[in-house]
Image 1: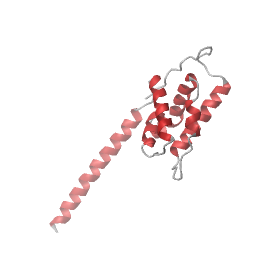
Image 2: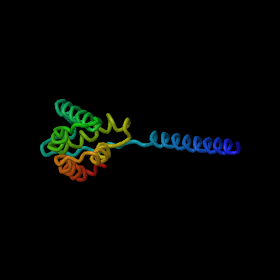
Image 3: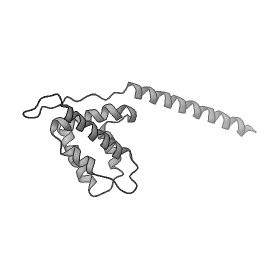
Image 4: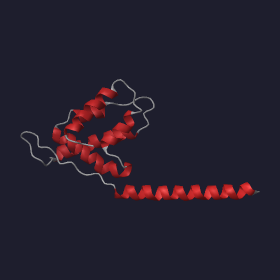
Length: 144
């Protein structure tokens, strides 16, 4: 009988601590925002994107999201990452910004953070060097 009150009190304390944690975490997520990175200027190009470039940026960002968000039990398609890596500097940063605008608030992670988290689970030989090359390029523009 005396354990009944102790267990009830312990459960109540754990519940209260859990609720405090959840509300605090949610509050911190609401305050967090992912900042835009200014686009670099390619030689011979302007800062604004053409309609074709904007379409390419949106398609690449969406493909990256689809691949990063999928379970990938039977393997991963590395093509979206290869496509991302070969883009010009301006488009590379534009895809990063577009990805963060579309999916960053939902996931609370930037493209790089999502890739780093997923990279832990992707043990494929083709993926590690590809991600390393993308990280090197992200470092060039300080994309965190």
